[in-house]
Image 1 (cartoon, rainbow over the protein chains, first blue to last red):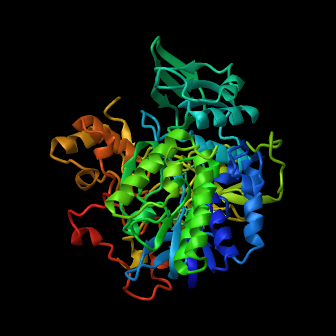
Image 2 (image 1 turned 90 degrees about the vertical axis):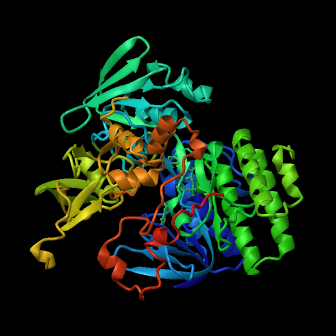
Image 3 (image 1 turned 45 degrees about the vertical axis):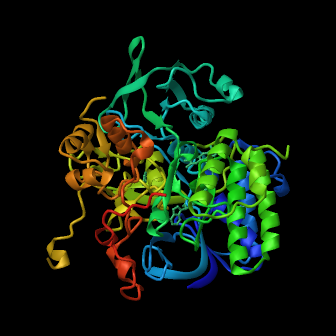
Length: 370
Length: 107
Length: 109
Ligand SMILES: Cc1cc2nc3c(=O)[nH]c(=O)nc-3n(C[C@H](O)[C@H](O)[C@H](O)COP(=O)(O)OP(=O)(O)OC[C@H]3O[C@@H](n4cnc5c(N)ncnc54)[C@H](O)[C@@H]3O)c2cc1C
Ligand code: FES
């Protein structure tokens, strides 16, 4: 198989990149390991704000945005390969994918790798029992599969995502018996969200002592400052944050950097979202854990860079479009993440003796364009 | 348990699928994964771990942790959280490592 | 935490086994992997990567930023032998044994 641009991952970042490249006339293939497109957006029923203005999405539910993206891809010339997993690379630099029956290489001029993020584990005695799952898994079960993962739950972690999932579980009829946070206060920054859960006991400075049960979760012991607290539940959700997915980049020989605020280790990239492998660009949560608007915009920047490198758009147009995207990203992205991102970019450009475009100084401080 | 009335999402498919788990006939909805279909039937233990034979079930629901292995239509170690359930599927719990040195394989 | 707590779900390696590997000289995730099989099961350390890094950080007193990730190799995801051979056009796959060739080389920026 042969194409101009191969995109690995059909989540919002990959799909938005695909649409950008398709509009400029490039031949695009999107390969995703799942049976449907949309990645982690498929089960996000909550409202997304901070959407880039140009999309006209306003404040919309994640699942609604997902449908829009998929419909647009369906109406485009983008070739979609579902149930196709990137499993390796060939000596000539091409990516190898498998559909479960056979393995083949896709010859492409450029690649965008957008595999998203994974949820971080939290290790405690009994975390391997059926009924202990990531908060994201529970969210998939209720919103995508329409199945209840349990009746009574304990949520481990109190970040925005934990509380959002706790709220969603609650609204499906699952009683959240406890939120367990090892820090000394709730991490969630969304006061409204915290309020919707005000009847749920929150244990701070606390950890899971043990989860037990015959064959599946039945009983949880929580270590609190006031001693052990026991609850009978059948579901334990772990929400310990996200980290960028790494393995496709390692196989493409991309170099890695560590940036705590971007989620830990990730493939290093320059302001064009290009990794140390010149034919591989990066986008979405894989390029740093961030909010939804920035996920779309990194997809767009990666696509614009690939288009420019392949000659589908002029370098003047590439620069203009990318400076618009970065400006918008600087306005949308949380300050901490933006700062980490620009720090990483500056380091990268210095190390590789690459010039930074003029617009970089304007995004660096963030929110310069108001 | 199936969610019959979702607080946000309108039900799209109610088409039924019938499949088997350890030879018991079970009902699922079209479009569900095998792991979710089993969970809807109250089955969360999908197999046991390879060394200590401890119970295992769905953990990440994203095809990354391999905790949800089952045997489907004779194929061992199938990731059930990313495989859609189909009519007449024969699903068995994952109780051992696959036999690769047996006679069947000429070893 | 209870030292018998499992960290690697696939190979069922617990905290104690990881610390013992470090007492015996293991310094990196890959050292621990070679000594214990931690991270060598079907998920290929996708789940235990950071929990193990945290144990290394705590044991050595080094910051997490200094604890490298494990070496990941092909195939990236579970794939059947038959699917690997079907339709593949010969031996031009980047070596599965890349690590032994480039030993000591890391992908750090
Ligand atoms: C479990 C979970 C829950 C989340 N919940 C929220 C939330 O509630 N609110 C919020 O704002 N954000 C949430 N996020 C963030 C969410 O990830 C983003 O909103 C967005 O979906 C990320 O887009 P993406 O395109 O970068 O990655 P993803 O949406 O993760 O898409 C990546 C795609 O790549 C595919 N893929 C991965 N590896 C391969 C491979 N080797 N070969 C082929 N295909 C591959 C995957 O199948 C997937 O479809 C969540 C993230 C996760 C992981
Ligand atoms: S639950 Fe993790 S792979 Fe299926």
